[in-house]
Image (cartoon, rainbow, N blue to C red):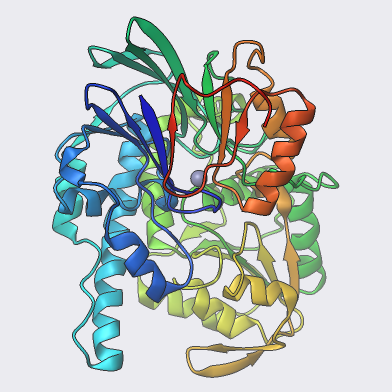
Length: 473
Ligand SMILES: [Zn+2]
């Protein structure tokens, strides 16, 4: 069999790896979107380097767009096989892919309005998404399933977002059994809401993410301690507004739960908290509460007491655009949690526009912000003023970042995760989903720890499995 690394190869988006058996059976691990600068993305995402109709099955580790977001395009181009995910990932995809089709259709219209040329077609439509959702089959954690007479697979909890899984494939070829592991994205330990990542079964070859291959998370404060400090400084001492750009999936729910805990111990002091993102509201109220068994013990205890961990007295989920606009007129301190997490797009742009120029307010970033996004410019205060919806807004508000909400394992946690594998049985390690410089650092670390045959595949690089030598390279 062979593996070709078609995406998230020496970069962090567009996750997609193809496993081909000698009999022609083709398994696609993920089908994610490339994310970044918009025009060049359309071209990168539009076509596949293989015939979509020839893929037999897509196995999906989790619902993030850089892992799942291009599946409707694969379906549009002829894929009719099975899509395998956990039940929670399937439910999340129903909302996230629909939202993505909406954004795609709106972007295509805007391109037309802007340059008055023939519009670029949307990458995929609502109909493509509906066709995609019909192809899903779900599988539970810690249970082996047969995919093909020669292929079994098992999901284990990756602790990254709701429903996230690592994938272990057991492939029988030429009377030899080979296990290939794919970590998906690995979560951090002791995070709010989710369980810790679960070690994978022993494999022969491991494809491991390496987002934080060269970095450690700051452990000065827990997420809750940092949130309470910033809330007190902003809303209690300065009686001002705390604006939190947050991704609709995962980050919003973690931040809401942190506020619920502060509310429970009487620390919120009557300050209202608003979630202003229709997608975040849908995911929280329709998906998260359905999977109460997917969470850590603390959250399960809430559910067991018939208490919703994503609700508390002063929390409001804002529904309509009108209600969202009303937040601009609010007097006094409040917290507004709104998407997107990087500040580019979504209702949060209005809140940034209205609150950035007031020195008493705080903009709190709780996730990763890519270069050149509004979020990264706000953190750097470079440039010192921003163009938002045609107005120039100076960045005078306080800016803060909390690292402890991160959904990705850092270097020490990645090493701990891979260290559960017996190095004498492991024949090769492939680093994916990381910036190349970080991957080189992580590769050196793995070599120091005697991991065999560590590779950093380039895009399109093919590896014949079982002919890789076992020497260090
Ligand atoms: Zn992810």
